[in-house]
Length: 476
Image (cartoon, rainbow, N blue to C red; front, side, top):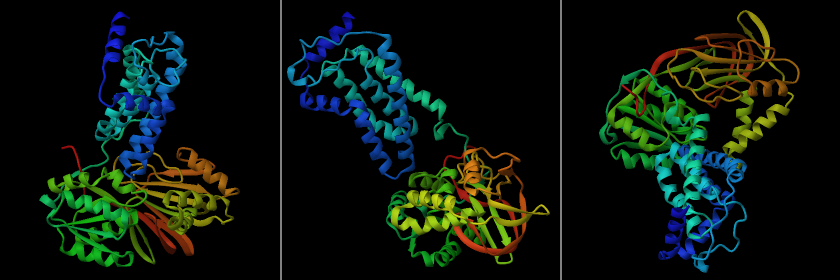
């Protein structure tokens, strides 16, 4: 306690330029976590997946630290606040705290948020850490806490961040989502890489970042209607075909890469970007490292065939109500954005009076509301896919929601529960081939978010390890 008081008085005697105005304001800004919620909002608004995850993890860590401090810490140790005699008036807060001094809730929240962000993104954590340190220091500088209050609070905050990581592992802790490793051309500076992208503000920024890292790469920007032709021309002359866009654009690029036997380099530039994120590519530097060093994996490709032709899917294939959801989402996305459009589309589908689809599966004709086939097994599958850890496991992750009364209730039940082999609501199987017969003319299917009509017989199967894709950090 004596040492605590000596350090407190030593800080009170210091006069750092600008600190008398800045630190009290910073301390007030952190009241009730407002400062950290603002930082989290800024990170989320950046549009970067890693930044969004860091923001969520930071807020979750802050929430746990705050709950721990307020329910246990403050009630366990009843310590009076410091006497302010040695603290200059200009530094003192206008409203002095009335709770007990030990431990510091502000320091705990600051440390929890900064540590949570750092566990998801060390680079962003390094940017947030000085601000967190300044908030912790401000609590001693303004005279509302002893140094030990701040140190213990910060330690509890950091512990909360690690506790959250134990409950929800970071991406670095999850199993590596890719095997087997294969040979691909190493392209220093991106020489020999042709990147095709559809014109748009989001993709242009991503491509600019990629060119900063790979200045010798060639970029072709086109309108949506010209995409198939430009992909074919690029694949014919490139050592590696690159693409920046959403899952539908990546699907078209994968088909061109398969036809021409060239590796694919994927840079996310859409709303969901399931394939790129499952691959482990989130930012341009991730992809640039893999292209320059030739790090790549072989991935499975899902295929569907019918009388109308064949197509491929890297993520999911579906029929039933999901194609209607895709259609509605596309109708709204240009007006309200991708995520809001998805919510509106789901509400529309759940309220609709659409009739179940009838198809023959395994020799028996049955009604169904939804058939989902994932390319490789997903770790969770509701009405929409989550994540895959193995992109070459040789199976289709099939989920069927049975037809019957009250489709909305059935679909919600399927979305909120884990797939099981058999239940009154749903069926889940893991075949490598699936055949459906008797589809009515005009039956809609969706593959990687793209729509198409089929009829008659439909066969789903796999092309095992058919596509070579650049992926960073593949272990040897």
